[in-house]
Amino acid sequence: MSTQAANSAALARIYAVRPQWRAVAAARDAVGLPDFTLLHAGPPYDDPRDPPAPVLSSAVMCCLHEDWAPTEAEAVRLIASGGVRLASAQSFGVVTPLAAVVSPSATLVEVCDANDPAHRAWSLLGSGAGPQIRFGTRNHALLERLEWRDTMLASALAEALESGPIDLLALAAAGLADGDDLHARTTAATAALRERLAPRMREPAVDTMLRETPLFFLTLWMAACHLMMDAAASSGADPACTLVVALAGNGRSVGVRLAGNPSRWSTLAADAPRGPRLDAASQTLAAPLTGDSGVIDAAGFGAQALSLAPEPAQAFAGWLPAAWRSEQPPLLAGAHPAFGGHRCALDAAAVSSMRIAPLAAIAMIGADGRAGLLGRGLYAAPVELFDAALHAQ
Image (cartoon, rainbow, N blue to C red):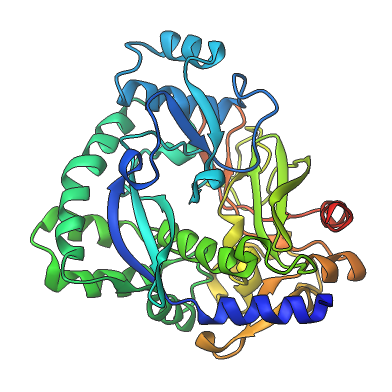
């Protein structure tokens, strides 16, 4: 099969997926995550006993949350000795944001295809405003938030979803129509989700959390995009397919996987995203690209949808290439009918032939594993990464 035919077949599979939020479940139940195993974003580490500082901080917090260690020092020792194992989340069908790691007790959102309910993907359940596991810090205030996520919030949402799954394409379309890019900004999609949940919700604290957490929709959409791109891959059904099904960083390396050979990561050393900081005067070093959320941009949203999102586009204005509006769309192979023909599906062959670095909207976090969120970020994935992926395929 030719590359064009393979890509066309993969695009048809993407268009056919109808992602629905169906359930929440602990990772040990959802994906069989064993004790003393944590899942991280991006490609696997060469040495999982030595993760970068932000991921190590999140792993330490999860060790405390799971009661695997009584102190930070003991948690660090467990990780360094291999007593707690870090593995790539995507090998479990999970995508996780920034430096967040997934532990067995962590509540995941389950997103399935309405046309094929056995086809599923997972991401972390958001836990509201305030300290976040995804920021990669040692802030002990997030332990209370993790406990709330995995008990009261999980229970309330499980009950709400008993009334039936929630269509994520409709919410995403509403978000795009109202100025979301669905990565740096999910305000409108989250508001639409809150409206859908309101008649089902008996716990006022959850409604309050949704009102105060405009990025809540983000991890749901991560799982939905992972589901769509996994359908494009279809276990490598079309070896000539050059669509990008993963664009992710582990805090050291940036990696991509292509639909034609989806089990293979191609990697390069990662640079840090750049963008507007919460504290404009801050000189804190930003960590190299960290997180699985680049799957949103690879699917055609995030930085690939900034032309529909005036607020984040304005925020990123000082970091966007001069010709981004004309240069970025040709890197995408398809036009998704559920979004009025919006361009979708990053094509590694197009990136390689046009020599244009595709953009992803991934936040900046402190490289020290202490500072946490620094601000919004833009990442330009190096063309050489896609060259390498195509050569490996």
